[in-house]
Image 1 (cartoon, protein in one colour):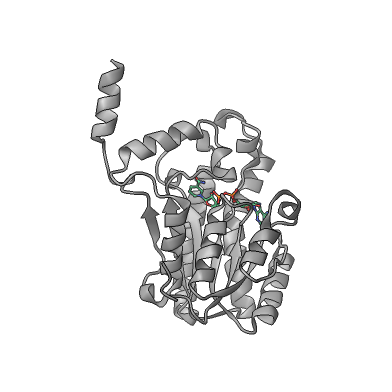
Image 2: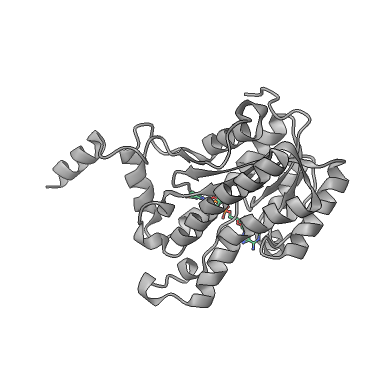
Length: 272
Ligand SMILES: NC(=O)c1ccc[n+]([C@@H]2O[C@H](COP(=O)([O-])OP(=O)(O)OC[C@H]3O[C@@H](n4cnc5c(N)ncnc54)[C@H](O)[C@@H]3O)[C@@H](O)[C@H]2O)c1
């Protein structure tokens, strides 16, 4: 598939850690669709991940930035504009981490400094990315900014812990900043609520295998893969979706709307 949907567009893609990352697939598809972009991730991810391999494949550079630090984000936009020779048309926020989840703390025994870190890394960083862009006037008119969310913002999935609050804040920021940036510069801001996906962040949730299998059984189309998610992101970066903003868009094979499925009924009956 190659429609040159992003021909001539410039952007920033955060959060590609390894080949399982959703952002990794977005980068490969954006490159195929004719975009030029820079990659970024937290400085610590430079050591853990394989982002330089991706940069080579996409003929681009990596600009390290901790998304919780405004000065890092200022440097990111400034360097991206210099490298790409102009302002951004798209930005992907693909960042999430909860120290409480990582350390498997029960929801009744969360550490609050961890909780604040979860919100800062996974949600406030989205506001910082947008506010820094606005202050530097780093995004072109009709630009598109997308962040990745999860349905735990609306429904409770116990093991998702404080990430549920982070995603609720993330989605709310998309609405508030979408209203502001739309009026100011016609920049659109949306979140995509993605199916469970086998990545480093996803698999870090206790019971992830069960989340994944349950969603697969409930969704009429099955779980949306990272590749499918990348295609959806590309459509939101393209001019084909110019009037879509301030939305949380479910990309989940029908999971969010379905009550029960034959597959689940058969499984429950089989286990009786
Ligand atoms: N995997 C799933 O099941 C799933 C489902 C719905 C939504 N999402 C969301 O998709 C996004 C991408 O996650 P993924 O599943 O591709 O996993 P991933 O682990 O590959 O990506 C998460 C990224 O966040 C980066 N990151 C963490 N702290 C950072 C910081 N301070 N500054 C900059 N970057 C930082 C990590 O280095 C990593 O690259 C996340 O927002 C995640 O919550 C994932």
